Image (cartoon, rainbow, N blue to C red; front, side):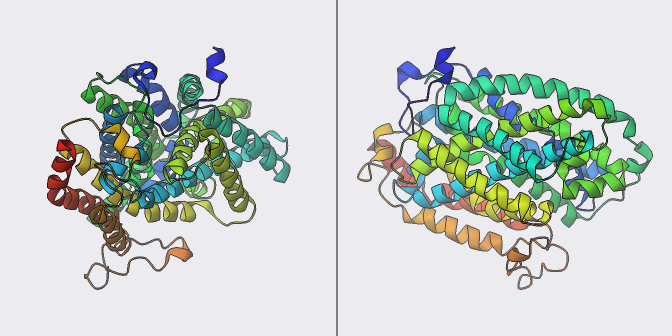
Amino acid sequence: MLMVFQVEANGINVIGDAERKGTPRQLFWPWFAANVSVFGLSYGSFVLGFGISFWQAVIVGIIGIAVSFLLCGLVALAGKRGSAPTMVLSRAAFGVRGNRLPSLISWMLTVGWETVLTILATFATATVFERLGWGGGTTTKIIALIVVTILTIAGGVLGFDLIMRMQTWITIITGVLTVVYIGFVAHRIDWSAVSALPAGSAQNVVGALVFLMTGFGLGWVNAAADYSRYLPRGTSGRSVVGWTAFSSSLAPVVLLLFGLLLAGSSAELNDSIAADPIGALAAILPTWYLVPFALVAVLGLVGGAVLNIYSSGLTLLALGIRIPRYAASFVDGIVVVIGTVYVVFFAGTFLGQFQGFLITLGVPIAVWCGVMLADIALRRTDYAERDLYDPSGRYGDVRVLPILTVLAGTAIGWGLVTNTSAEWLGWQGYLLAPLGLAEGWSGANLGVLVALVIGFLVTFLFSRRQVSAQERA
């Protein structure tokens, strides 16, 4: 038990055989806990905001969540093969120092997600306390921010063993309390209102699909191997893929479906979620259940933030920063606090900025994901672990083609997305008019899917010989 509270000694090094343990089934706990947050209910409102019907939303919800987390499962396979963090294994595709570009993108994405989750936890706590008559103003937000930050940084600093233990308890507690929440508000569902929602265009459906993919699986692909790297070498690859994908997508699918029913039943609730996603969900509860709701909301968000801060710390080290792993997690915690303070106390509405963040970073991470998936598919043997850290080794120092693919894929992808709710991103979408897509497809954010396909096809078609040479070396 005391070992759980010791600081993990491993950083971005390869995990030795003596430390490799567990089974793919144990991946259920961290991945389920990271995605069981009641924030998933709010996605029902976000998706209906694309102007689609309930059944269209159900279809894109199941497909978007399942497919995007399947990508996570496939990337997690690399962790079992190489026993190193995701953004170290990415060096096989980009070169040891060439991988700093995708590592920087990955770090921005994980720190951004940590900040989003911390912001939501702070808002939710303040809303609950205000309804209880215990405050809810600046002081409450500050206290909530401190508590959430301590829990998140503690998990990131102490590392793998504590995270696995924390996520087990978070899974149990939040799972039970979320079911109770659903039971309390189920009577608010108005099926006649839900079924009357008009169908949207194909463009709107694609836009919702892309939003869900970036909000779920594509937000985790750059961390997917960080937990499977501890599994024994002989572990079944199919089990790693299956348990990662299943554990990650189970809760979001259920939460999204119920969220669609809630948001589709009440236009007022639908509008409230855009301003304060979790606080709006608290407002429809009986007063006596607000404290348990605050617990499930905060714990669910912490579950996701803990995985992000652990992975962002590893990514910071993969960038070449020479500090201990626990120090990297602490540095990221400071960055998250600064970002949260800005949004909570100085910025405007939440939803527009959140959508802008997801789509903008979703494009380059989609290109990287495509490159990584193709590289994994081309490899027939395990990684040469020492060469992942040696610029003169078989993986090379800087591989030009993958880097150019990320840059070109990002440029094309950003030209095919729009973020009208975030004014600072108004420059995006510059390819829509020249390609004749400005009329109907401007909100579909095709750039994310295009970026993913570009990354995969370019790597799969043009890196086959390079990968074969690496494996013969």
